Length: 462
Image 1 (cartoon, helix red, strand yellow):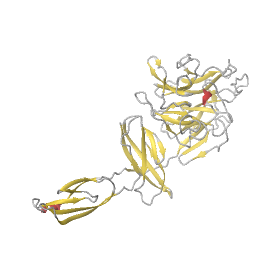
Image 2 (cartoon, one colour):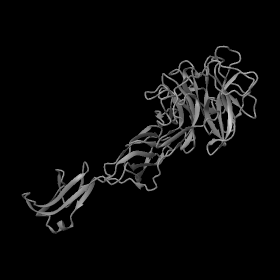
Image 3 (cartoon, one colour):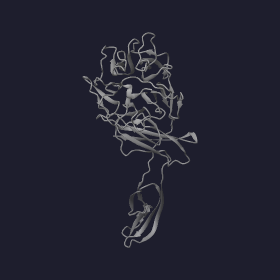
Image 4 (cartoon, helix red, strand yellow):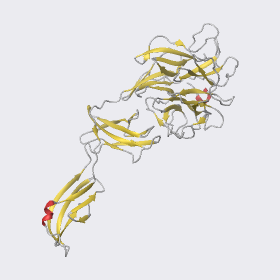
């Protein structure tokens, strides 16, 4: 596996216990690509139906360079993809067999230039030069350092946003929050701005690494320093207009196992992608796809009105100079008047009574009308929405099925309207921009998978 406490200086591989080659869950299917056979493959990037990645496979019969553990250096490769899976044999990309340079991640900007993470191993018997980010372009021979970080610090694993305006990378520069932190730069007229630390909301005393900026604006990354981390796990955050970052959210357990998981690539619709994991004993690229159930029949969330205006037309026949009407609401309260308004505190069954009183003595003369008001939860999956939802901040939603009769819910499946598909009775998401989002929650009867219930509601994000 890649030891992140050392990754910013070198590549370190360690053996791990073997796992089953294919993991199938109800919601996420995960399978290894085996793109380079027994060699290791890391950091997948898909562009124009070509999968780019780094691997330590040997492909030169002449001079070969090794890292400090006598292992092959990492080089970049590409392979065509058909139906999301590799088709054909990988070919070298931007790599020269005769040089002693580690090249183990890349990201493309809108012009097609590749931002490559590399370090020179040819002149050092110990660990090689610090890791750097270099830009390779077909229109320029300038391959200088992209970001200005201390000479003794390693910086790399950069990700460029689809619009080319934001870059996020990892660095072990002194003065950060932990062993390896995430930093960002913004494109200006003069080039990339000075790096800024993402701050303690994202960075921990441990390692934050392998960032990936998705087309939705989400910044995915790997961390081993959070309370719920099991080795390296994959999370995402969002950057607000003021440069602050939302509390990171963790991806599914099917993607985040008990070993190291990192280096995510996600499709635009967030239904499939690739990531790196050592769950099978070596670093390998895995393909995953979401298999959320389909809910073709979804109904709008119904709400129960607890406030009513009560009026009885027959009461108009009584002389209001002599008589008055009293409404007893069935919850221990009452009001005087021909027409009254009342709000109930909760759901329930209420016996409402309209009585006619002597206006002078207040004595009840007779009961004019009686009603039974049944305030019950609708037969639906109730979506409990936060009182206020702010862009760039975590929002917690929950599902309630108390109103469903003869139904045993088996898990809950959420589509949040922002690309997130999440499972669970309570879920957390982040909306990147203000607007109206349609949130949908469905569930399946545990006794019959063909029996489904689903509800949607439009929520406003400020």
